[in-house]
Structures are given as structure tokens and as C-alpha cells.
Image 1 (spheres, one colour):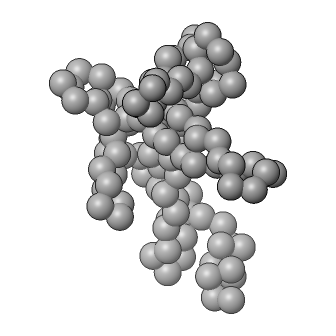
Image 2 (tube, helix red, strand yellow):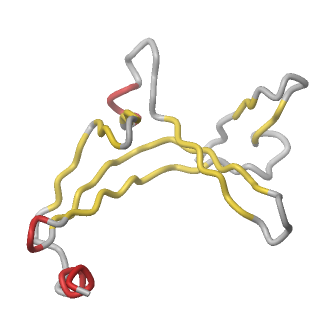
Length: 109
């Protein structure tokens, strides 16, 4: 109940942006920071659910911004802003080869 009260009062006036963020043993970088590196790490994958049982759709994108909102009592929320790929497009979408290797071809945003 206390967390709900804190969130209802809204965040503080300032937003903090990050070029990278470590959470739960994973490291994320935004696209602008990673573009010049040999091993970029700005890709995002999220498993989604469908109405059908035991069927999932995976969504893929590129991380563009990492933002932190702070609330009273040192509570904070981290937001990842992403540019998502169209996984349903046969030309530029997601393809899986015979070895179950997933390949994502970017489209023009």
C-alpha cells in the first residue's frame, strides 16, 4: 500500500539518462553508445504470449534510451525505450534457420 501511495504522488522533476545499465546479471547499452564497439550489446528480446496455449511470439528490437524516474523515499523506476522490429514482415522480419538460429533483419524505421 505504501508503494502505491508513493507512485500516486508522481515522480520528482528530474529524469536521469544512462548509456548503460546492469540489472539481474545482464548488461545493457543504448544503441548510440554501442555503435562503435566491436561487440555491440543494444539488442533486446522479449518473449510474448498469444491466445493459443503453449505458443509464444518473440519480439526483437534495439535499445535507444535508458531512463530513471525517482520517487519520494528513494524509490525509482527504470524505463527502456526500444525501436521494435516488425516480426510479422516476411521481408524484414524474424527468420529461423534449420539449426534454430534466429536472424533479425532491420527495416527502415
